[in-house]
Length: 329
Image (cartoon, rainbow, N blue to C red; front, side, top):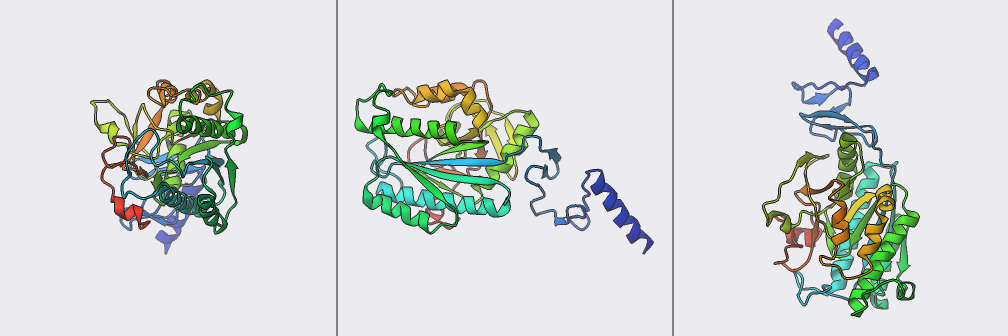
């Protein structure tokens, strides 16, 4: 009886001074009131990873704007190839959107105080395809906006108009960046419509963003996909601990990544120049930012880029592609 009272007083004292107690005998934390195999972290407060202990969250995430860029008419831009499973492009767009919404809902349930907005920037999809996209949106619990791309706004800006596909790709990307600059508040996540996401993707990215950026005391860039090309050269990398997995430092991404509104403003010239012409590589000016700022990608992948099976920019290793395609992750 006396021992029980002392234990309760000790637990209360630990809570008051901000410490957590680990009872390895019962595999439980009495201060957190959780089993040790549960998620011990708290959004905007602390990140706890066994056995590394606690990281105080100083870089708190309040909101995120997701910009989902769709083109349901072009199979693979700049390539004459078929994607894995060889379906029409609209099928990849729909599955990508469904998986993204599923991941958002999972994150909203886990972090109800986090403000999440989703905007679709559509590159002139056929009405038949737009109706399919709208049907998914209508059945959703939160509001999703659609911006229909207007080519006229970009004809005097974009240098490279050698083909309709190249021009529309650059125009939709610039529309994405302009929307982020105008409407973004805290984090902004640029997402292309040929990625299929695991349910835990957004929750893991938010929690890992807070942990890593709090440790290094600055904002970062995050890519949700573990690309094959990252393993095709003898590139040195740093490995970091995120919320529930390892992350590695990288110096290249495609156009699907997350960062802060502050960094969009800081590196606006890089974002803008990316959209003026067909650069080589396409993401040349985005990759230049990673020479100055940390960019990380997960191991293993949180999102899979469903391109051609032989593409070095596509399928992440060690993933059950068919299971993910069938939405059974």
